[in-house]
Amino acid sequence: MPKRNKPMARKLAFIMDPLERVLVDKDTTFAFMLEAQFRGHEIYVLGIRDLYARGPNVIARARRCEVMRGSPHHRFLDEGAEYPLETFDAILMRKDPPADAAYLYATMLLSLADSRRTFVLNNPAGLREANEKLYSLNFPDAIPPTLVTYEIPRLKTFLDEQGGEMIVKPLDGHGGEGVFLVTTKDRNLGAILETVTQYESRPIMAQRYIPEARKGDKRLIVLDGEPLGCTLRVPREDEHRGNIHVGGTCVKAPITARDRDICRMLKPRLERDGLYFVGLDIIGNYLTEVNVTSPTGVQEIDRLDGVNLEAKVIDFVESRMAGLKR
Image (cartoon, rainbow, N blue to C red; front, side, top):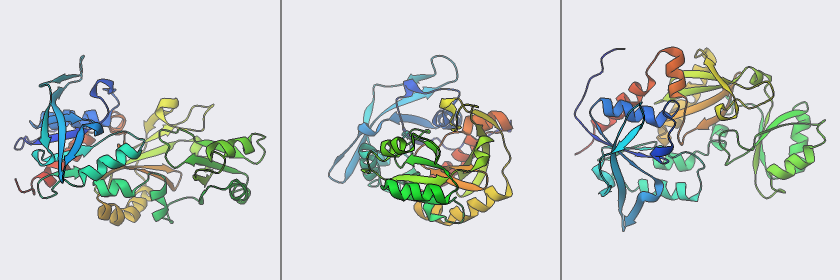
């Protein structure tokens, strides 16, 4: 592994789920923390409920910590203190989905940080803009035939148009939650559509079923609009979802010419919205989702490809911190 430089020590805050629950060998945020710590940076952790505002000034109650691969995998260095957001050179918003009301309020508070003094990844306004399902609609040349609707009859018509097979999923789902493969021949079709739309009280996304899904769902990691690496998440024989927590297996996969084309389509919009680090879900030749809240897959790609993607991400964060007014 090449020797990495250790630049001037900075303060990096990670907004995340409780550190105690981190899966050391899977969690992408943990890999970022290890890399930042290796370079001599101070790392702090907090949750979204640890943010509060007094007038326009946002305060974070954060704890400084150390992380390690062994057991225990972390050690807190203090009992926590209150810091103005601008105390930190960089804040990495890595709270796992769902992007519920509490999450959105947290992004609004983060938007009050002085961007001349603190770099936030991803941009809070971009996080609010980019529902992980709906954001893909901005790129019509990259996505499969797609419908978003509340209405069951419209869904059934779309199903017929797609040859009798489609995927349906809630707009606020994550990790494969609530994703169904439905067919015109399924006697449960009506019940499934009633369930996912909650009797037409919430909109859902329907997409043409892509047969290549049996070979796997690609997670492509993208930094500053450029592809870094990818893995194919292959579903079990008795599943249509490739998500790891439901039994999918990560296998080595190349970055294809089509993957690069999709990145070129997305790059201007990602740059505009400040979505610096994202995870694209690609099936066959189609983009199906744009993951922006806390994209995962870095550790799996590291192991499969013998790389160190987190080093490139922290390189990028350091480059942004270098331009701040301190």
